[in-house]
Structure formats: structure tokens, C-alpha cells
Length: 227
Image (cartoon, rainbow, N blue to C red; front, top):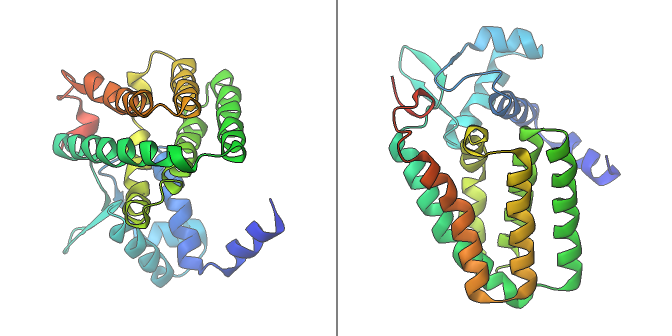
């Protein structure tokens, strides 16, 4: 870890550090969608006060990763069919625009950094590591969005990242292989390098809407349905 990264972590309040760890546990499926999170158990697990846990859960509630129900407790948010449709639609709208806008700002140094992410994807695909692949997916897409030159698009996308990453955690079942997921990003990078607007927009839409196509007919999957 870089010294700068360490200093950033040290400057984070304890509640934020706990919130980050809880996110990771949800993404690793240590906690299931819809599962109740008990303050006492979490306080014991992390060896912190219940007030710190409450602060961490409040952070996750603001990010819509958990939901608090009066007199019932706090639960990991479930994804309904509508949630899934809305996330796919919003990703398509934002990323198709951001990726095409990013073309004019794309320099060789950016291509090299994106290539480094794709190379890491190849390694993680060979290791059959979905969690790492989804983390790298977020890095790749966020990097390109940051290049789009529209501060409001960037801000909106940043606010959605936790929900998008949580949504990604269940997409492994819709891809034929880890390699197929890696290949899609390899092709996306090639599209960006071509700097052809239609190729880039088509690549983004195909990448995101591929999932939508796979989800059709899967609407009874309990992972995405409210009980």
C-alpha cells in the first residue's frame, strides 16, 4: 500500500472504516440480501461500541445499502426487479454518454492505465475470482467516466457506485465464464482506442444491456425478488 493510501485510511473516522468493511462483507456474501444486521453482534465482531456501529450503519443507509425499519431493526437492502431495471437503465444512460464524451480527452497515459486494469482482469479471470473482477470493473468504468469532462455526470455516477457494485455481486451467474467478462472489457478498451463514437457507444450498451438480456426470463430468481 502506498504511504498516501495509508494516510488517507488513518484519517478516516472509525465508523467509515467499519462501513467499508461491512460493504465488503455484503459483496463477499458474508451477509445475504435481506439479512438482519444486529448492532450487538457487529459491535462484538469489530470490537467497537454500538454507537460506532450505528454510525457505520447510518452511512450504509444513506448509500441505500441497508434499510432501517422502525422497531424491527436494520437489514441489508434487497434488489427488486424494478431496482435491477432502474440500475441497468441508469448505467446505460450515464455510461454511454460519459464514454463517448471521454474520447476527446483520452490520451496515451490513460490508455496505459486502462490497459493495466484490463491486464489485472486477465489475471483474476485466470484465478476465477469474481469479486476481484467486479472490483476491477468498477475501477475501469469509473476511470473512463472521470474523463468525460462533465462534473455533474461524474458526481451522479460517484453517488451510484455502491449500489452498482452491490448489483454486480450477483451477475456471475449470467456470464458463461470469467474469461468472457474479461474479454468484454478488452473489447471496450479497443473501442475507446479506436475513438469511434458509434463503436464506443455500441460497446458500452452491449456490455451493460447484455446483463438485461440475460435477466429476461429470470424474474422469479429469489435473489432479486422481495419476499
